[in-house]
Amino acid sequence: RYLEQVMQQLVRAGILKGVRGPRGGYLLARERRRVSVGEIVRVIAAIEDEGGNGYESESAMGQRIIAPLLD
Image (cartoon, rainbow, N blue to C red; front, top):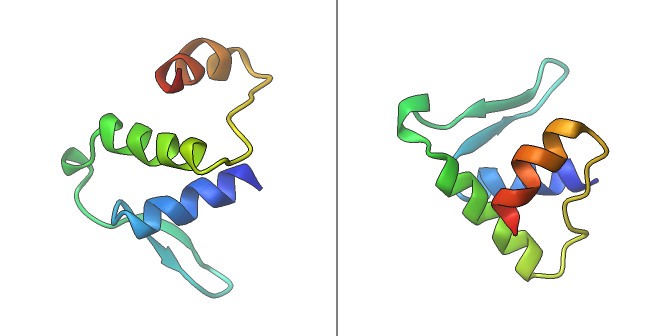
């Protein structure tokens, strides 16, 4: 659920675009060099501020790399 919430917010922020249908999914809405990690972190932080479920990861990568960006 958390990942879907993040993906939807990234679509609203213009970072991703959603593609519907059986072969659907998400694509970058603009060139990858024009998307910064800071933009993505700000979108996730906004979810946190709205009282989202919060980011909790059991993976080592999530705990060491992603979680500190959100603190």
